[in-house]
Length: 93
Image 1 (cartoon, rainbow, N blue to C red):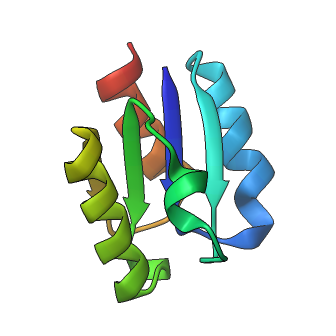
Image 2 (cartoon, one colour; image 1 turned 120 degrees about the horizontal axis):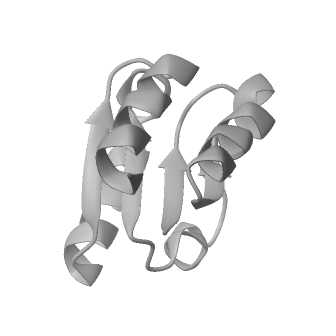
């Protein structure tokens, strides 16, 4: 299963990737919006939005990309490792 994580803290990128690997998911983490956002998101199985640490513009772009490609999207307010575990238990098990 492929997962795109949008938002979160820069210092936790490797931790987010390791947590996803534990659940057998391939992860792409995008903390800041840079050029070519739509191409970088691609067509994953799940998009996880950490809404507390991401700009409104990035949320809108992610939601539009998810609707365009019929991708499941999960919004989480906190960007903690425990919150990510909770979502991945729900979707990847």
